[in-house]
Length: 306
Image (tube, rainbow, N blue to C red; front, side):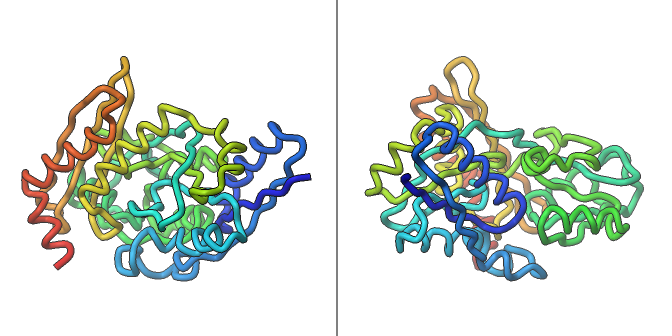
């Protein structure tokens, strides 16, 4: 019996994602046993500080990537929106299953939509991207930081600490925790995070055997969208400290990208969109980023990183 080890965080969502990949592999190959290696990342240890202040999304993947590099794990399963633009030397993003719903979700006990919230309602989110787009819709809202796993965040909502919270709908769908979703937020109201709803499988570049095993999992159009959105993010050099959004769709053999960069004070929102043939997906991502940079984005990034 051949053994494969998946490196994963220990959160409910991370375990759901890893068990999903495990089940796909074991259903396909009777001779392969998949084990989960739960790894506590820096991002899991620091729960009381906004991510932008402690180093951003790489905090959720570094220790798992180290396990790949030292051979104690064969596969890493990530939420792609947590994966930094640059992968360590020797590792590759190899496969992405079909994308889940990428929209954000509005959760509340008492209210049915963002627009129905009373004046000065308290909304919880730890995302700068969500915060600034929410305030563009409703400048009267009071936005407070909300960290912790999905259970913790929903409990804080139910306990009355917040009038509403905003979470990624994909994770709620996967965990079947949709009871308090009152509104699927349209991408016109809040443009999603780059690669939201996408699971990524990261492997060692020289591990051809594992690549051969998991290649069947890859969903081609999801991978094309991933490459487009990540090329856009990479060109902007975007991390957690930067309010960046981006969302691609494929229709009639073309890929369309909507993108946003906001200033930290929320006074400037630079939107760009465009399309290209799907075989030019990465070039589209880069060109949309270039337009944003040339349209005031360079000044915003200089301010963020100064």
